[in-house]
Image (cartoon, rainbow, N blue to C red):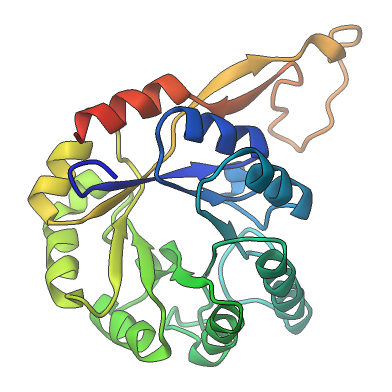
Length: 250
């Protein structure tokens, strides 16, 4: 922890967690498919990350991209994933469930909170909060349900443009729930965001490209969707950037 500012790094793989640790992160959020905003990671990624680093790992429980109002089968999947992640060593679960009108689905949220509590894990609500019609009512709902922390960009695309709202959220929440600002946090603005808003923790992601030449024999082949991402590279957390951000906070 640096000057009482905890830095959480958004990770998409076990290698990301390892690099976040090398960069001095205090905690990580582990996902898969960061391109889609983060989905449930594999158990293998969680177990390797726990074996290779001492970092607290908050595991994403999100069964699909595209909203937060899930079918019955998707929610059943989320329940199974949550139990498995908790049993495999996750230090917390991060999730978000909304009704079609964007308000908090208290029934489903309560079930995830209970799974976390039964296993002695943290219960974290993610940026689904940023599309709720009334964030104060949403925070009151989450506090009542026993959620310990909420990740938010202050209902703006970028935290830096929502610092007044984040500051208001921090004051509104008091000691009842932790406010974790994320989305748009960078080395250049992290210290300023923390100082202005009064937030005691920040959520950051910074990746750098890595090359994988194994597909070079046939460059006409793609394994992804219509966007055709390059098949000869992938992203991994930039540990040097994380270290510089850590240093800027302390």
